[in-house]
Image 1 (cartoon, rainbow, N blue to C red):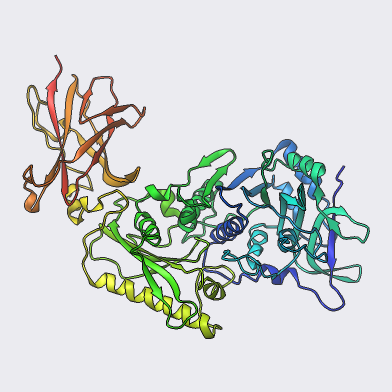
Image 2 (image 1 turned 135 degrees about the vertical axis):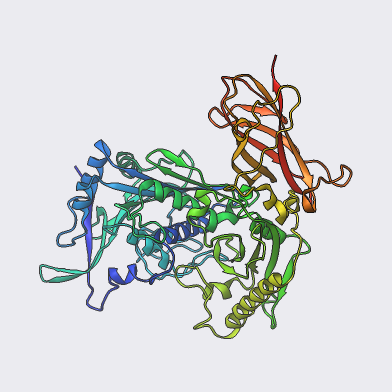
Length: 601
């Protein structure tokens, strides 16, 4: 039997905040709802992070069935009378749940009721998340401000219902709390008006509800299949009932769960990458799962689209970082800026591309505050070379961070000067003007690519396009035989590049990848990959002018078999598709030839 019950908030005689108003406080952002969801929840997670340790942040999509579906029905139903939340319909559709969980955070602590004042130094996170609206966060250099962004959790739910399951330390004691909340539409029942706000918990003497606590909360969380808490950990799980996954970008085709998983992973990458870096003191460990299957969130340090942004961000902490002084003080410094040139990707990773804020090569500045979450990407002028890109980062200074916080809308995706005055207006205007001028200046002058980390990206200058032949983007495979070369000499008797060459980043170095298809030879062949540096006109560079490219090795496309070095033997039973990996030198154009040495005897 369900020990919890719904309590619906009546409209007070002096007036109350309507649910519809809370849901609409985000306005109509241009961002995809799932992108807003990731940005807002990750921001809350980072603000609640415990110092000196990484933070786990994961999103899971799952379809309910069997005992868990029955457990959700028993917990949520019957819904409040006359509320029209649509919970019964959601359960009849089979029920789907999206959970957003963090660990290594403080959890939702503080008092359980909004009319109970917190102790000195105590954060009222539970009431601010579950009860209050527009309560200012008392958190220095945090990402949030008034907590309006939590409305996205209810908006993503078709029935506007969430379940919060949290473990916190409350006045020295570890406590687990579980409660459901709804932001439905206002309605009238038995001659009384209701705001549309509802809470599902344990009924107290005065009629209000409190969350299930400790053993009762843990038992209910297990029945509902919510992510567990390892002993000694704290954090929060928010479950969104019957989530709306939206439509594919630029179309009206509803997203599948797989599509949504890809988009969520991409959104994490583009919006959270500064906090995902391995050396960040509050590193985010991001995961996405769909019915038990993981969707890999790309590593920003190995994602070529983000390489210039990552290096520019790291430059901000170096002695030579450009510091932008304020025209008046305080603050004495409004922020720091860095810009890095690099090579653009030749082929996009589908996960990276799914939520990319721009198309093509980067020519943007990522703006952020001290929370190290990307606010937006400001576009500059693109380069004249499609192989080149540049990325810049502007990060507000600690003293000026509050000025930029005042300029952010509820979705935290812009810095708007309308409504600002005094110092905040001057600071934000100066920063925006500086960024525009720097991006304009960058586009007006030609620069060779700078090294990114330990990777000499200048190795792949714009002439790298010479790797590509005219026949549909495939590379030429030259055959220079010794011994019994392939008979007939026709195009079907030689190896062919069927994918790539394309750039990727592996362990902080740039690598050329290409997939080679070998013919169905009747005898074994030995093939040697001979990458070489070429100069203008396609002639080979003298050996003493530049170091030679290095062949890392081969990998079978069907079995993942690895073979080191430049030479590979292809027997009759061997697979015909192999990936070749080459590390290029500095300031060079690379051409890859394949020599067929002949038949084994």
